[in-house]
Image 1 (tube, rainbow, N blue to C red):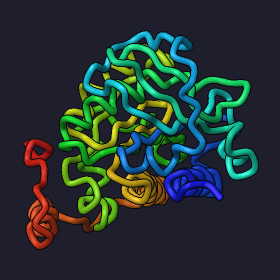
Image 2 (cartoon, helix red, strand yellow):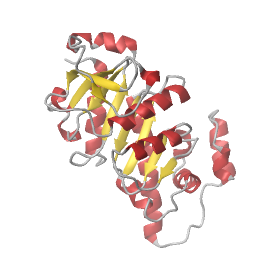
Image 3 (tube, one colour):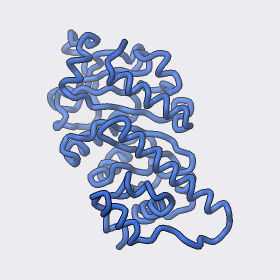
Length: 271
């Protein structure tokens, strides 16, 4: 039996596949281990090779020496529960945060091709969340992707559209969502632009591609992604009906939802 943190990671991967978020080898995920979690995983870790470091191509000195669970490049989310050490692994960053070494799993493979993006965004969210955010999850939600073809690719437009499509959405993303135009998957350009958005958002929409979310736990991150996709689904059904919108949640009602829950809504979205 694996430590609970690995089992929780596996469950998120399975849930993503079951909901159609991670087709074929689509999507990837990572988790920044807390010190006590590293100890619980210690029996699996091989720290003997001090020389086998792989260049990241980016630098994240704020994550010096930290450990991450990460999906393997080319792995299928539907297979994670069937072959955990072949589809997942644990890696450690070096003292300067610009290289990693494999210390468990990833048998015959390497971390996701978007690992550099994960690391850079972990670095940003560690600062922005005061260390609370540990999960990075990339998925391909159908309805959200569809909206990137018909809505302006603007933070305010997407945020307000999602908020007004389902009551619970503003509770989950009171800060809104960031939106980026299409960029080459796995590119440094995409990684850096996502970082810019992640300084204030916990979810970033990649046009015609998918969604990148963070959270303090697997439930937090996955729930955020699931809620965003469900809200996008409702909006698409409204659009597909061809009927005019006769009523919707008002701006003040959105504010009142957050006020009742002691959440801080992003007033910039209304500007």
